[in-house]
Length: 292
Image (cartoon, rainbow, N blue to C red; front, side, top):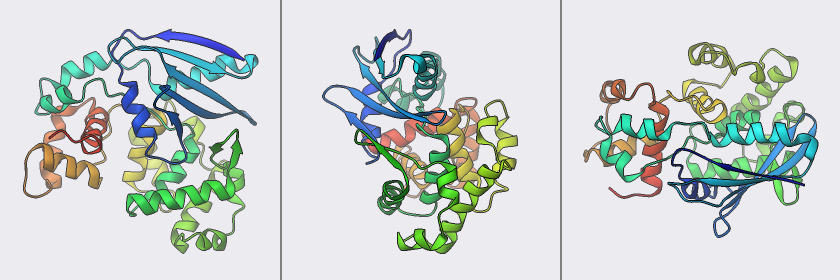
């Protein structure tokens, strides 16, 4: 076992992250203890790290614990990436206070962009969630992971690309996947296993080039790639304009009778560059914790 304590120099609302993670049954967080359990794959090995908040939103202090000392450096690097502890949330807050989202960012300050724990799992989950209501999408994802993933100390790990590539389409159909969605999930895994698509090589690639590359995959469209860029790579300037949740949040925030048009959103979001991911994140938060 090992333990590390880290204090940030910028505000960070960890309590919101605790609540957001609880929306997904595959995650495990303890709100009372202010602790998040993080399943990680280090090479071929599975491990679990925990992140506990010891401070406040204004003075964030975190205690990170892991199991194997030889993995400490890699686990710490991954944890810092996932939780985005390098984000300048003060600067981002100041930026949005000069925009038409000033009231939103005043109500929900220090909202971080936190990544998913598993990059391939995130892509798979986002494909599953396409064009489904949230409740059914979460049910399908839960069935998928509990059928093909791995469990360790009560925590679920997404199945690897190698495992998913072997799944017959018919098995996913038996879990209530459509035939087409079953093909999208399995065929994407096959592309990754063959090396035709390499998610791990995209860290330094531009958003535009990643969009061109991943939308070549059957069943992967712009909404899927935008969400993957935000929640796998932590890219700061994405705005999933087709997302129904964001459209509803904007409707409520601006007091509109109908959801905004694409043209209206495209006009507004020009002023939100280069932090449009934070606009999206805070808009989602506004419908999860409604104040307007």
